[in-house]
Image: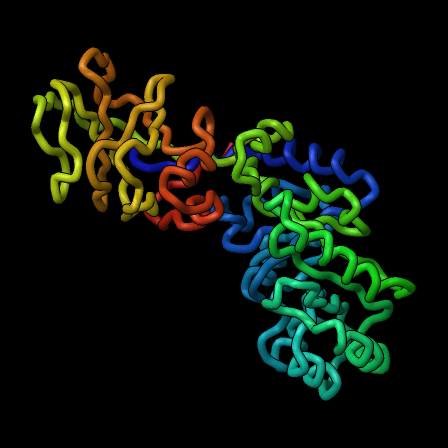
Length: 359
């Protein structure tokens, strides 16, 4: 028997990237591998994708980790550098940076560097989280163009707030704002995240930035826009083992707090995974687990090391059988909907206790 293991299918990962290339054949592909490769393993994911055009990370430590394992493609700091002292590190390791604050701009102007840094100017086109406002855009461009520490030409990017909501007018407004500001600018542009790639084709531009969809998980909530509908395959299958099968009588309660009461005589399966492994404690009764080809519902509160499922009175499941928590045969999006979260959170919150197996 194996305890909690995340099986990572690198062939599925490469398949998904090839599908995304077909979605945007004229665009370069910046593979987003922040948050430990969306929980799939930063270095393992990156080294499995030798043909992508670049990688996007959130922190400088992630970028340096990629360089340390031999990644030679361009790497972009999506949040930009945090302190002036980071700039020489970017130069030495050929790391590109987003710029989105006056403080970053001033640090570039004051730095003494051996070579210029490749800069992407981030525009706040409507998300209002990071980026220069439209009224600040021209001043930033002028100062960046005048700065010898900035490689030319500049590049330009923004980020969608609601691209996963297909009827929301905000996305079209963001596209129009970005296109109007950057019209006539010399330099590559990027807008499309996972949802943008799949649903907003006029946002593809020079670079696309796939994140969650690259791992075979849809950014959309509705089933008609599932990852499978776009030809994607799940990259992570989180599995564990049934460690006990027990008889439970009608009216008996299961688990901490007695939050589930059996409505019949049935069999309960105990699976070796819990919130200590990163499976959400908030998963309610009825959340599906895949055992022997069928979805069975969680019965009772998720514990630190275990969870329990209602196998049914006629079940023939045995100790040692595999239980799939999400992935092959059970989309992470389905589990996330039951839990009341998003699949992004599921895959990125696994703990170090979960074994990682790559194929």
